[in-house]
Length: 246
Ligand SMILES: NC(=O)c1ccc[n+]([C@@H]2O[C@H](COP(=O)([O-])OP(=O)(O)OC[C@H]3O[C@@H](n4cnc5c(N)ncnc54)[C@H](OP(=O)(O)O)[C@@H]3O)[C@@H](O)[C@H]2O)c1
Image (tube, rainbow, N blue to C red; front, side, top):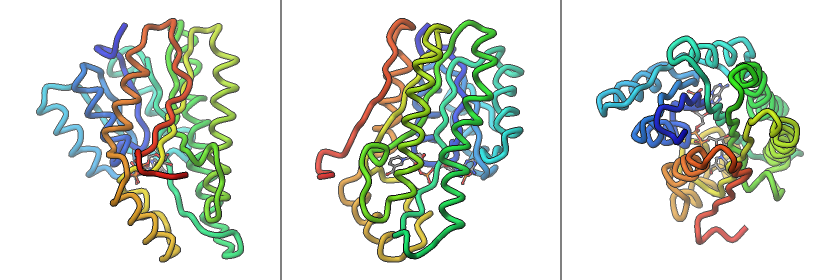
């Protein structure tokens, strides 16, 4: 089974990497089930995909609420009969140095970037066990491999996701479930807007706009992994803009 006709749930589908992946997969014939908090953006995307001959549905989903993530996975089964790929992509990146004590932002990153991914795994696994296989993908980051000043908590969440996804891979291969992380460097998306420290925000914005990958570059990497035969499990794609030094 290639991408065509696969049923793919995407969280964080209202902008950036999630939205671009929805478009790329739908163009290749996948049925996409889209979740995020902004209903207007999701509805615009469903309209655009449908106008282009694709199949898409959307449901407002806050990934910090396990019930809502479960409902999104259940929507895939209700509408399209199965769940082939769960793409846990929602995330935020309010970078700052620890001494600024932006504790609410630390908690938010843990809730969305880590617990949101865990809720996606929890929603997908029972369905995939029952249907005899599937694929779970999470958007990690170069920050899941390296930590720098300002990224202690964000990188911590992405290190955690990398660890959780590797554990998932080891446990679920026997059940024909593939696990992969996509780990981009700088990508030109709306993610910088979650940074509240003005200097860090400006620097991140500048880097992303001067040399960042496009969201579609990451979407194409995800599509490549989904398109492999079932016996091939791509476990990580780490991609940086050519000019990104670290
Ligand atoms: N841009 C980069 O440089 C970069 C690099 C490495 C990794 N990443 C990762 O890529 C992923 C996607 O980010 P992006 O770059 O595409 O940025 P983005 O354009 O800001 O997209 C983030 C997405 O996450 C959603 N989201 C945030 N909080 C949510 C919540 N509580 N529940 C559900 N959805 C939520 C947002 O939708 P709503 O606001 O509508 O809910 C949005 O669709 C993130 O995991 C990020 O850490 C990005």
